[in-house]
Image (cartoon, one colour):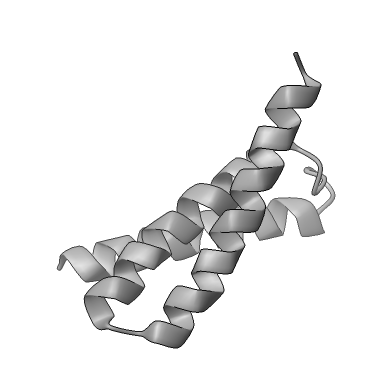
Length: 79
């Protein structure tokens, strides 16, 4: 049950951020966009570890790194 909850939650967060961007409510420069992508990809990393899915782990690892980098960059700019 836990893997399924992690997978659905992570996917929902990433898809929500994507839909907000596609409907022009959020830009890729918005903190919310990057934060949801970061949290979603971290949940999907846990999911991929539980499933032993290396390709999915790599994909979400890169996604998390890029998203976290953007969140940190955003917070530095706002100081």
